[in-house]
Image (cartoon, rainbow, N blue to C red):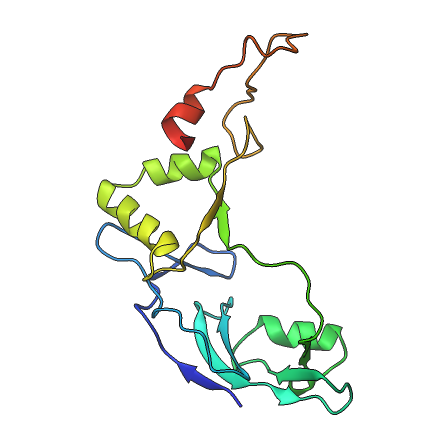
Length: 193
């Protein structure tokens, strides 16, 4: 059983074409979530975004014992009306939306999750720096604060990537195995560090 709950500040949707919306963040407004709270034991919280306009829409449900596989639980979910992406997936996989099951084996453990985050590439840094200081503050809070999505990890690429405006490395001298010519670049000192 799912119940929908509106939360935080809604998306300021902008349509840039290509059949999807983007949530705009400015110096005066950014969308936010309600504070994240762990659900009661046996329940789950689902956040869903879609091309149909959902932006981290929150819903809750309860796990049900799985009669087919003892010791596991199942979460059942289905598409929401108006979600254009879902019918295609269901048709492609020859199942109806109400037949989708997620089965969890609580006895089987894998790696621990240390956190969630994103990457600060040269392109990301250039775009962040192009914002006003107030908009930068809103953006950073929307990623890292309790009123945002609470990222706690960031990946910073070493040297240039395909998201850089030029190619560069940290030691361009051929045969410099002692790294005597190692040097950070302008991109590092102005955008990453």
